Length: 240
Image (cartoon, rainbow, N blue to C red; front, top):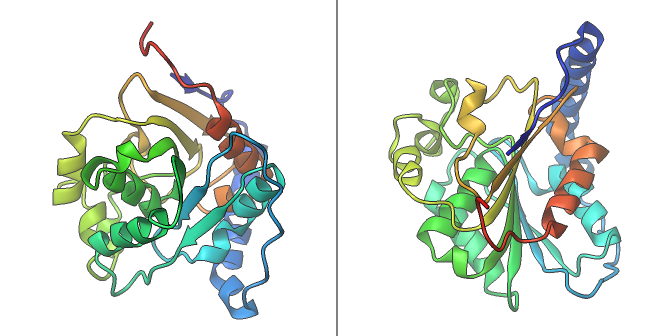
């Protein structure tokens, strides 16, 4: 099931380009300003701890807007995975998710952006994460790789290779967790756009207008969409 925006409008395209440039600049400079303390959680009964995972060339602070929104809206605990994009192997990101999940009780939720979303799905499907994860939200995720993978330096390249072992392996596995795929209409990092999609009765897809790949990280619309997806009622009879 997909929520698709209206036809293209020139002003929206221009706006998306401007917002993407601003978001990319903010992503690059934010680490130099140091980490600020997160707001205190305001727990609401029934909501689960969340693990957020950033993408290639990212860092935990770019997930701050989503983390702050969730904490203020009642999620009891929000943790962010951190890894270096240049000397980290894909399996080490899964190890980081493992390490944080081991400190949490009961069921958890996962939210990943770009390569981080691929890592979340790999953890769910290959590390037994389906037994722990209740909801999974993927933002701008190259599940099928991207044509730009050749520009990626270091060992993480193979997780973005459309013909690589991880893309091939994950494509053969069923989706075991209720999943929401949120993607930007003007994403120029995951090419072609169809590589962001997932099949399965437990998958919902939302396409947001006026945003690009990095712009999603700073958009209040995306933070709200993530929160809504984490609260969505579980389908008892998928496909009915």
